[in-house]
Image 1 (cartoon, rainbow, N blue to C red):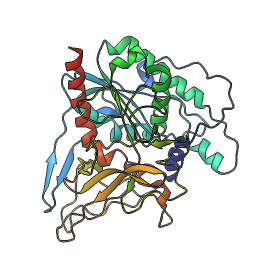
Image 2: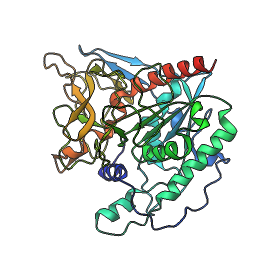
Image 3: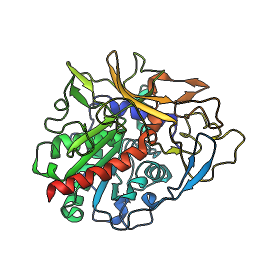
Image 4: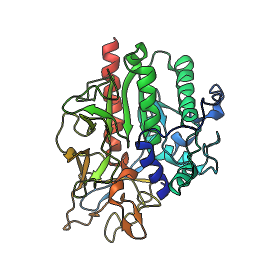
Length: 387
């Protein structure tokens, strides 16, 4: 996935409290009745219909291709909002999907088409350029209210014209999670439409919850998921390596509200504890801003699929470290076998790892299979309750 270091900067800033806006009100929203305002729509050859084939790399070095097949008759919907990726030169992006938007949707949303219809609106997000300006000491001139207004307008259009009573999973990462976090708080939490929500997966962002509780904080009636059979609940986390917890300057995994912590739900073990994850990692790694992935098998053939699934290689557990709460990722290295003992994902600038960023680039890939399968299990539970 072609993500620059600036993408990570954007992600971190989006995890911070909202920056004061220079605009008093958002511009009129796009017309989401027009297909060109959507990055992904069901039945269309777009970013969410891209090749999701993966090579299963076993610990003994054996490679087996796992073909991907989208659902022929999906029974529920997924509504996805992508992270900060826009390379547009303006503070807010335009409504034309570039390669960066299409690529991130392919890596983060397309696999959910195994079970659901995927809807992903284009929105006038805060761009990488706007955030670089702020980092350089310039004024913040982007309009976050406009970005959110677009997402809300797309959601309203989807509900009015496409939903037709189906359950829906909300999926976001980074800035996209921030947009959905606001949407849930303002339009869904405690309201009748919440009955349509199978679950919300807000990844790579901080969601406040009272310490020791599963509900409260940022959401008043939208609890954390603690079981796969639970619906109308939240899955959220930020990732760090287990042996490299967040340093004091990290803005991930921590919230400002007194008595609150950053929520963490492990999709591989919703009830708690450490579990091996069902990972789907980029074959070449996490993209620019990160080291390249080492060969998956020592002296083995090159992997030809876009994704790799490495059974047993990664484990994860929600942990506390001081004021931080996060998903700790362990690579179960075995130097005796031919499979790689490392996974790419750290932010590396001038050959130096920046520990405060954690594994933000691979928040979703390390548990992607768990997230996709969980969406289907929860959708079945939602349908059963509705009946």
